[in-house]
Image (tube, rainbow, N blue to C red; front, side, top):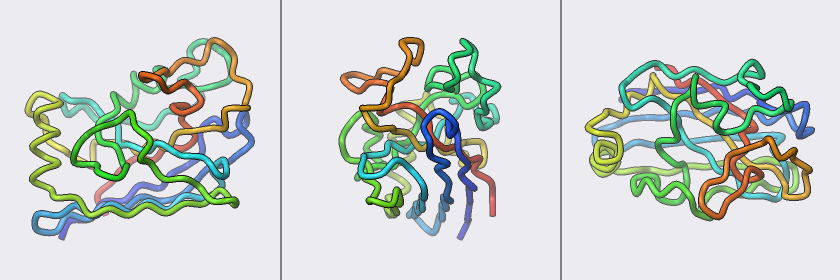
Length: 184
């Protein structure tokens, strides 16, 4: 069995009023990838997109910090994470192996802002779809970062905050926490 872990730390906490934090673990055993994410102090009672991001060429992804706020609006939005973290790769939704990112099948936090997510994914199916999406790239978990996204729609975001994905606006895609995946 091979294990990986990410300690997830807050991002954009000062602006959103939540210091979202938690852990993510990934265990590979035979042909299964078990994903477990435990989050705390996220905005309550809303859906939170969560994914791992990275570079298809295998370049080492790093976590974004407030240093990535290139336009100086006080927020690190999804496009501002890309230079250090790469692109959105695998969603942690109802069916990660399908690699269907924009949908409404992500965890919803409880009234305290907590949520748990666990999925057992057929590794061969995930790897096959990953290679199709990213030109024969490999998962390489230890070169990826985990992002947790999502703030309430009543939070006033400046027009400079970007991150629209299909019908979903920056409230859905704004990163609230991030962690570097490392071999355990």
